[in-house]
Image (cartoon, rainbow, N blue to C red):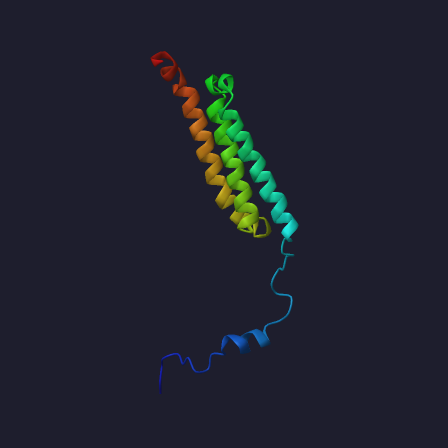
Length: 124
């Protein structure tokens, strides 16, 4: 008597799909091309705002310049992850796993900039 599991009794994927109950998966509507154009337009406008901010000397000299650029970059990252990686339609856990560490890193960077920003100002 053979005690090993036999793989010959396993159904192939086509047969398994044929016997799978309907409605077991959660389906979502795929975004249309107009959604992608809207997202691309928003990303372009944010990028234009970042570039424009770099050419305003008074804003570059202010303490809000770096945090603003970091925030806008983080926003663009979140938009790309949510729409182009279809994370918006996935389980909430995946959203938290992608955006949570980014939020923690951004807050840590902002805290460090505010804590040690006075050293940079004294040197200059």
